Structures are given as structure tokens and as C-alpha cells.
Length: 342
Image (cartoon, rainbow, N blue to C red; front, top):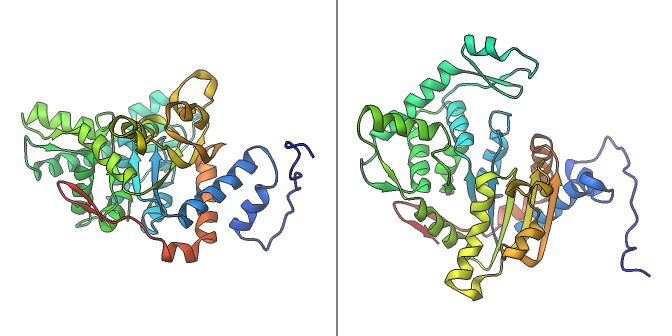
């Protein structure tokens, strides 16, 4: 028999009595992106079974689109061990944790009228600019509590922000759940967000501020991916988080060739195409040419809107691995001025 002719496509059977996990097992026997989403659930399950350090990259406007509690679930149930996020997602998480909202809207709207009414638009999501300004002010007040003119890395900064937020939060969020569970969060492009605007405001108006040691982020995430023999990554969209996570493996090749094995597991959910040459759409096969991805890695790309794929995927993996999650051996972090991994 030809090596190309293996399992037949199995027509999907509708049932009102199956779980989401069983649903994705059925999808894995079909084709196209339905099959890939099913494979993603299989790969994530394998990560949880093995002694794997799992890193999640979060880009795109996921929190405004209603995905905040999906990420909270991942943190609280330790389905991931480290989060690398855009600053925007963390700002919007802070905004909702303080009791504010993003509102369902439409892209079929007069944006000049929105501007005149003080409404910001993220595709079909609306937000009140006046509420955003109050969240900016909260960040500036938080900055006043920190030691001025000393260097923080983003992991320490967001851990301290999460701890402060625990004192007054109204809604459980990414920052608060990470602070509770000592799960590290990195934001390699923090200046490209409202956090950057708040920091800029503090420096311009109050002539004071804190410094960021971004290279310390690079060193620490390398510590995380080398603390165990096996590591895996899950990418929601692409952007800076995708490269930041992947380059951790490149540092291995500089420090010690023996450590340069690449990620054993890799999942990405994206709507970007590889033929434009951008990182957000690049394939894991391309990553293998750099040594970012292991040559024998279990990997899959799901070309789908993450607001569709992510909730389905997380629900299926959580259902399938209830017992495994209770027994999973996971890294323990101490998130002081210096990162310690137990």
C-alpha cells in the first residue's frame, strides 16, 4: 500500500449526545481546518500528559472580543505555564477587571460619529474612551507605588500590577489569576500599548518614571524553556509574542548547541497566510529551518478566527484531560525581583 493512502476520511455524524471533546475527535477524522482543530486538541493533550512546559502566545484583540475568561481558565487550571501577551490584551484585561466593559457593536457604522461621541471601535466592538482614560489613570497611580528609576522587567511589573489589582478587582482576570497562581506573564512590546502611553505620560508630566529591562525578559524566558527537557507552545494569532516565544530556543543554540532542540509541540491559530512573508503567518516548517521547532515536532496550524477555534479547543482539551490536569507535574515559579523555578 502507498505510504500516502492511510486512514479514510470519516464523514462527520451529527449527535445531540456527544461532548465537545468527542466532537473534535470526530472532526479530526475529516479534513481541512476541522481536521486541524481536532489535531490541535490531540497535541495539547499530549503536552499535558508529558512533563512539558507550555507557553501561550496571545495577540490580536482577544480580550475585547470576549476571550478573557478562556485565558483565565487556562491559568487557573494550569493548562499553560507561561503567558506572553501583547500589551493591548493586558490593558483590556485590566480594564474589565476594574469593572468596565467592552460593548457589542458593528463595523457598519459612521466612525466620525463614534469619535464625536467618545466611542472607540475594534471591528464590531465598542468601548467608552472616558472609561479607557480612567484605566490609564489607574496605571499611572500604580506606577507611583513602584520604586522610581530602577529597572523592572515586564514579568515583575505585571506580577506586581496583578497583586495590587487583587486588592480592588471586581472581575477575575488574566492579571489577577496569574498573580494568585504565580504564573509568569511577559509583554515584550509593552511600549506599544496603553501601558506605554501611561508610562510616557508619567515621564512627561511628572518628570519621573520606571525603567524596563527588556533583555531580562529574554534571559528569563530562556530559563523557563530550558528548565525541563520538553517544551511546547500555543500561538493565538502571531505578532511579537510569537517571535518572542520562538526565539527563546534560538538563545539555546548560542549558549549551548546541545540545548538547541526546538519546541517538541507547537500549535497555532491564525488567519494570516504564509505567502506574504510575515511572521504571524509563517509556518512551523519555516521555524524548523531556524531551529525554533524540533525536527520531529508534533505541530499543527489551524487557519481560523481564534474567537471560534480557541473556546472550542480549550473546552475539548479540558474535558478530555480532567484527571490528567489534577495530577499534572507543573513548574513552580517564585516571582520576586528575580525569577526562581522550583
